[in-house]
Image (cartoon, rainbow, N blue to C red; front, side, top):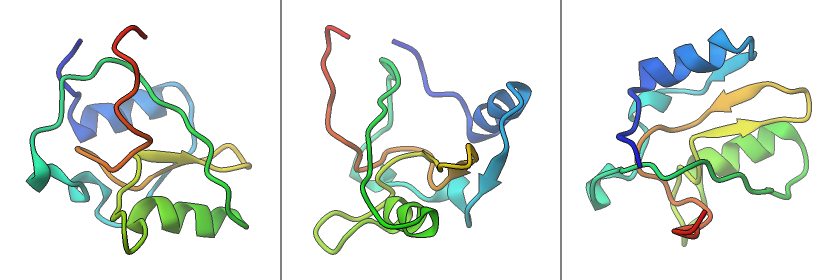
Length: 101
């Protein structure tokens, strides 16, 4: 377990690895933190989002749905390899994960 990195440190780490990062809106403050604290971090969760086109995928992950508000994750990796940062902090992601992982 670890405390979450700051948004600035997260962005710097991605760029230090040579990734092409797209900052979407006010991603650093777009979160669900009003529902409770974010952390500690146990690992990384990767899931597949099925939509038509990269722009739609980024939009859904940022804004969510009527029944599940966004952000749904912190970043979206599109087919061209770019990382779109859509939120940072607590998110309505793919679930709690497994404590054994």
